[in-house]
Amino acid sequence: MAKPSRALHQGSDETGGRKLALIASKGSLDMAYPPLILANAARMSGIEVEMFFTFWGLDIITKKKMGKLNVATVGNPNMHPWFGIPTLLGALPGMSAAASWMMRGEIKKLDFPPVPEFIKLLIDAGANVYGCKMSMDMMKLTQDDLVEGSTVLGAMEFMDITEGAQILFV
Amino acid sequence: MTQDILDTVAFDDDGFMEDAAAWTEEIAQAIAEALEVNLSDRHWDVIKFARQEFETQGEPPTLRLITQQTEVSMKEMYQLFPGGPAKITANIAGLKKPTGCI
Image 1 (spheres, each protein chain N blue to C red):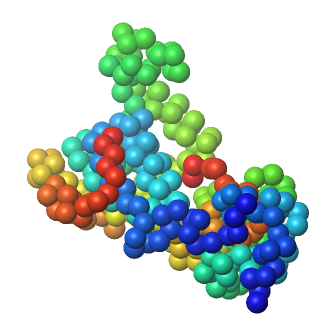
Image 2: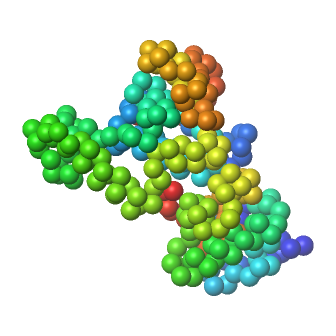
Image 3: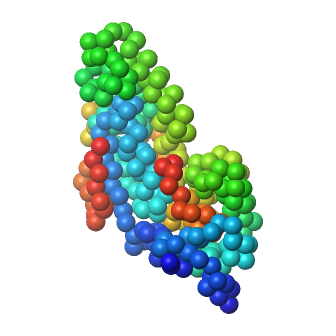
């Protein structure tokens, strides 16, 4: 038994509490959600969050792509047994679209927001969202292509910002 | 002085009330003080919604549900209850610790 106190809300001290650094490197629908859900859980627990979107992960915060992420039905070992799509059939036209449609439905049933809404929610929750400068140069993207509230950042700057943080690479 | 009321209430190891039915607005006020939250009308809107949700669903509401069903936005929730809005709401509302992921 413990009386309620500020100290019991772990990491709730916004200045001296925990900090989580999340690196999102994949842009498929199934791989976009884990870093978003973990970032949100961290913010809900009062933990500071710094998110770095690099390589294909950039799609998650790219305005034109964030709402259209798809599930890969070929070369994705998780297609079986949840979706029950054997790899060979997964190569058929429309399979990826169908699986993505199914997954969006499941996500909605759990009341998880679609990716664009999720990113806005995280920014509103105070998570810092960064696009990897090098990946952006490679994909010919500029700040204008990224979602509002995000910042372009180099990998070394990200290292500076996340000093002392716990790091999670997805 | 309002802190004394907390001695009459049973809490679990995380500081959440053991018995949600024993909750009163005075207790809420005392818990909020212990958590360094100054309760405004906006706070009460959220707390009352959380109580009502618990009574019908048996679970404290998720943060997402609070922002969907009340007029309080996500941004405001973090301003009203800094450092863990869903947990602090449930704590003040006398509910158990929320376990929802969203």
